[in-house]
Image (cartoon, rainbow, N blue to C red; front, side):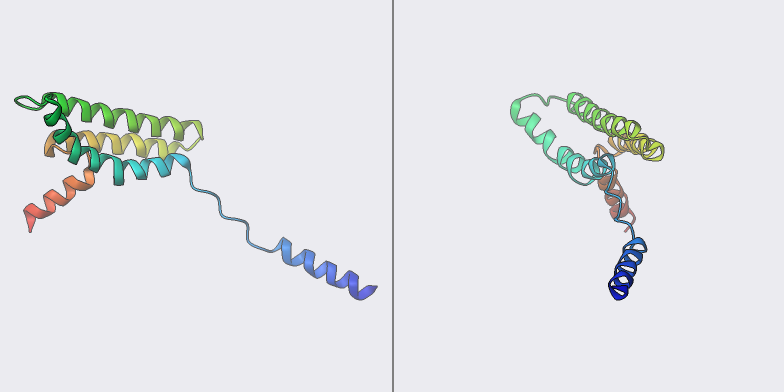
Amino acid sequence: MAKAAGRKGRAARQTDSAPAAPKPQSPALVWLVLNHVLLLPLAGAFAPMLAFRAGLLHGDGLLITALLGLLVVLTHGACWRLAARAGERRLAAASLGLGLLSLAALLLFSTPSPLVAVVRVGKLLI
């Protein structure tokens, strides 16, 4: 019986010292990454073409720029709200900062994705 009690004690000590399970990723972080890696580059690539086919793109393209700007504001606002509700203040601030960076990329490089803007600047420098 003493051996069985010793085994139970060792098993209990081993489970106590086991590392804790990793914390799952924040949904706000996942949506923010998907926004910048998938949604914004695809919207910047295909939205002007779809607007042209629908007959909405005339002249200077102000309508499509406004629609892409609205997309940037809505998606980053949703990510900010999701992070703020979860109590992740730094992620909420990062979401707002990336939203401003996306709007700057839209105004300066005609793309809502800062990643695509960086590639275009790098292509100019090479």
